[in-house]
Length: 242
Image 1: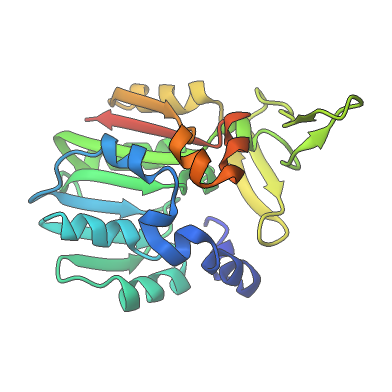
Image 2: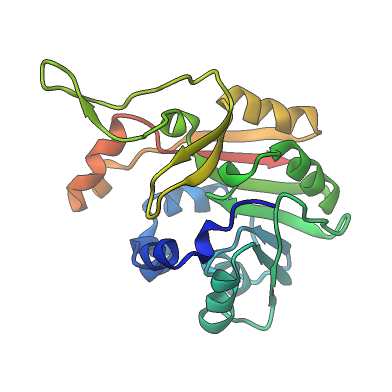
């Protein structure tokens, strides 16, 4: 079973205060690029893997999706999704993505935002998604960029000349990494970009687009804090087709 850090009070309270938690998709600076990777959602059957508070699930339903299944390990997340992002087309359920059994040929789109880096066995989930999509179905997801994750203690450091840098520790050494983010002892699993993409290819997906997200000049002008995202990629976006 994956670590259910989101149901711990300290983590949940901190996560609930993030801009993307308060403002939904509009609070996620990467959302405009993600949206450009999505197919037309009208009459599509969608599964939202690691749906959190249900912001994308509701977006898909309001865009005309025929049905949306939002899955998340966190009971608190699912409870909030049902309370704040309910829609007749959406069904929310608790599920551990490490062991989830998806119905075969049941979806036209599988989507996930910043969830898969918590999974130890990414390959198993990819095989589940492949079987759950109809031929031509799309699989679009984002993860924490492996360069961003590849440090035992991520964070800016300063060299002797006073220049800031982001350390990349053991990038080629894949596996469990523990960090402190909103709470102590958050477990994530590091995989290189190559491993991530080759897992998708080996299990039958065609890669359509890969984006190492960075903010636009307009976004930086509106929010100067985003300028540091130009120094190292934080989010990897992948669009594939079955």
